[in-house]
Image (cartoon, rainbow, N blue to C red; front, side):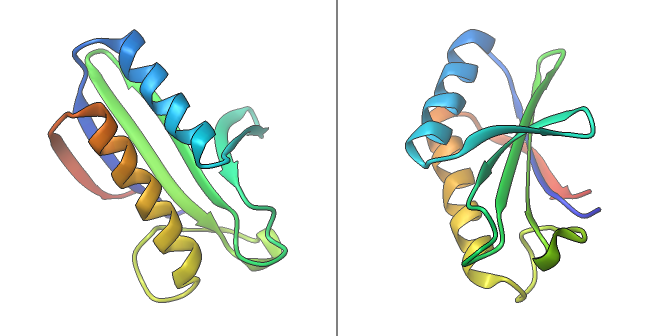
Length: 112
């Protein structure tokens, strides 16, 4: 499992969650669940790998994770690297929109 993540300091959970959900909807992400984990998915994997985003609130921190599913749905790939470049570029664009929509500074980012 490999995911890209961003962390922000939450200032208003309700507004921030509504902003995230609005941006996901505008970018055609649909709510999904697999193995007890809820996330949002764009694409079905027919043309490009599905792009996935998950957000959680932990105390006063927002954690947003994003990854693409490997072809054949065999695993996960962070948004780094050159494989599945089009799917990763699209997911990065959505993350950027979320960051801009929240108007919050990233306090930590990396790969899980």
